[in-house]
Length: 346
Ligand code: NCD
Ligand code: ZN
Image (tube, rainbow, N blue to C red; front, top):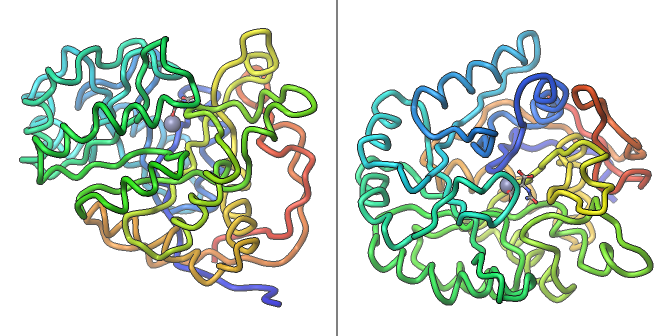
């Protein structure tokens, strides 16, 4: 049995850190395990232009002074008012690596998202021209579609046309949750990849709903069947470069989760790499963790891999009940559970 190992320092290719005091309380958790992270722009109001992205990046960097080197990689939030010029400016100023498309109303803070994806062709063309990536929250928002089918419906009705019309655009289907999405991405051209969260590798919808309703398992896209979880685990451990790590760690104050109408989002940042190691070890695939966590993402984004290392030790840790989160607290995913791994930066 392996009791310790180290890998090239991973990156988190999908992360929510929020802003202000709450951001200061969570971003260090990510910096303790990752060299870089793609920062989601779904603030209130969202980060929609180069200037906003540069300012947000500065606030994150200010919060990390004195901590290990960590680079926030910024994204623009696409709205119905995004223009190709805004994409060109974000590229020219180095403000953003990618643009994030939330179908309006799909998830937390997506009200300003895109209402008509078919009208975004000029913006997508600008992304392709600049080499910026398109990051997709791949769910339809039609209230008539069952919540468990919204990712599948997006793959059936929306994504094929985007890929067909923009064959050189690099597209990341974020936080995939279904066997169907795994099959779709595997069959697509090499410019289509996907991120996979730790919670979707470790939990299915029974964790959320059987024997009581557990709001900290509620995230979007919603947890699916165990057969889907197993397909995601197969993809993550396959060493197929299309699949890479994105935690979608999404902190919310406890009172906003444990509520009659709780927010979507699971907080995994503090134990992210120990959670992924747990999933990979259960699949007998620890040796594949580095490719998924540290190599495939940089390759897909066209960035160098990190030179620092992350050390894993087989030393049990119990996930705390809560962390400070601005004036409130955030309850981590799997709070109270014992994990067999702890990590530290070398
Ligand atoms: C995210 C959040 O809280 O910002 N929530 C979530 O359930 N994943 C938004 C998102 O990525 O969908
Ligand atoms: Zn997210």
